[in-house]
Length: 309
Length: 249
Ligand SMILES: Cc1cc2nc3c(=O)[nH]c(=O)nc-3n(C[C@H](O)[C@H](O)[C@H](O)COP(=O)(O)OP(=O)(O)OC[C@H]3O[C@@H](n4cnc5c(N)ncnc54)[C@H](O)[C@@H]3O)c2cc1C
Ligand SMILES: Nc1ncnc2c1ncn2[C@@H]1O[C@H](COP(=O)(O)O)[C@@H](O)[C@H]1O
Image 1 (cartoon, rainbow over the protein chains, first blue to last red):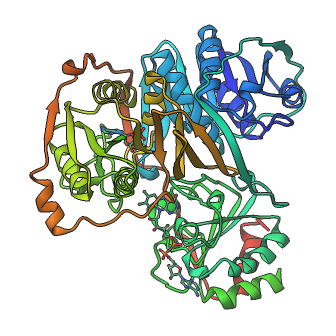
Image 2: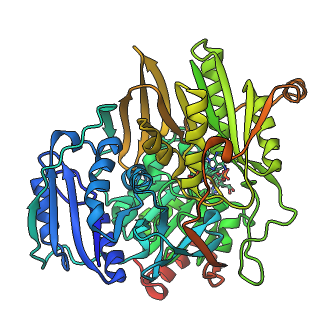
């Protein structure tokens, strides 16, 4: 039995989501190899070699894989996947983009966003915005799976010494190309991995007011998130959206400010360890999931919190 | 240019779905059903392409039992020209839906297929990508902007790090994200007109697809409950609780 984990990386380094995915792979009990597909991705491959508990790192270094175009990478994974019983990727936008193509090429189902491994063929996953948890059993010989990273504690990034294997296969479907990207740069911790997250909603009124969250985030070492309403209104960019159809977070502390608590938002944060809600409406549904609720005007509460931290 | 739009009938997004007492499935008795919100965005995008003179025909397809004709009619009321129902019973897995849609793609030869990024019931986020692989078409998933330039489709995608733009050969697949557009409401006259628009019904056999099942739903259960919290009276109390009770700051 063996499992192939698809690395999430930027060619130079490994994204921590890979470590959570290896943890899910360990629960399957088979030998674990990691695939690093990219261009000039030696840095990411050597980081993958150091990951605890990994047997081999397959490194496919070719211009065709530079930007993780799903049309190309899925062909590579489907070919390599012939030798594996399980193929796992994190349920990031990259994993979600590529893995269903892999599943279709292999003529198997994809099991999306698993939160636990019950046995080699049985998994739990949230459906209906996390209002229910489904247990599903796969009858496919090969399992193609995406992993909800917040549900698995990452394995150690150091301590392993996996063998490095170069993969020569080049798959360039020639039907898509990369044009450009606008990637947010921030000194703050990454939203999905931060120990503290403070999110603003429509109650913030505009993008400028998110500065009120920044001062607190600086003091707490927090990442900043947002509700869909705040993103749709153009207060902040899309990569900050937390929820059913945005990012899933589960920090030690989640602070929701001016967010009502729609089920689609709760789906993205209700597994946080401690939840704080600040809202001027004492009946806001967010208070039903909050460990500590503060009924207050955020424009008064936030400066006070910042000064007292 | 012909645009094919895939629409799914799902539980309305306002409904808080619960598991049945015996845990065999979710309880969908008497709940409001709607067109999947991401599919609504897909229809809107197709209709805008037609209004801009870029598209000449918009075809809406749904896979499901007879009740999904309601959602096809919604798409027609929003501006699609004709509908196709692929008649199936019970729940059909994304891979099988993708195979059926591939059958429709072969019949209709659209230049562009627009789907939602995710259905809000199963939260799968698979069908568009699977269709892409089966039909050998490129994909622009999680799209927030779609432009046709020199015969190529330029798609701006919402990704974890921000935005990415890709250029795709056509025919191509797009899956919609929330910021692609804001769907219109169907007007009463358009709802009336939609009743007269053509709606064909085809079977999986007509499309040469033999439906298979890969997954068994063993049970559904509610997620772990959060224990009830408290309201604090002041910022001082909040900071004190976080420091000394929860010990998270
Ligand atoms: C298909 C689909 C997918 C979706 N996906 C997501 C998702 O991934 N993530 C997500 O978040 N939403 C998502 N939504 C949207 C969701 O349904 C809600 O509309 C959204 O979460 C509301 O955002 P909000 O709480 O910021 O705004 P509102 O619901 O408008 O709430 C604003 C809150 O701010 C409070 N407030 C206002 N002023 C102040 C003040 N001065 N001080 C204190 N409090 C104040 C108000 O009392 C109110 O409770 C989705 C919806 C659909 C249909
Ligand atoms: N039964 C269906 N009929 C038509 N389109 C569907 C169906 N199921 C899924 N789709 C399309 O695929 C998208 C993604 O669905 P999913 O992969 O289930 O999350 C939906 O938004 C639809 O556009």
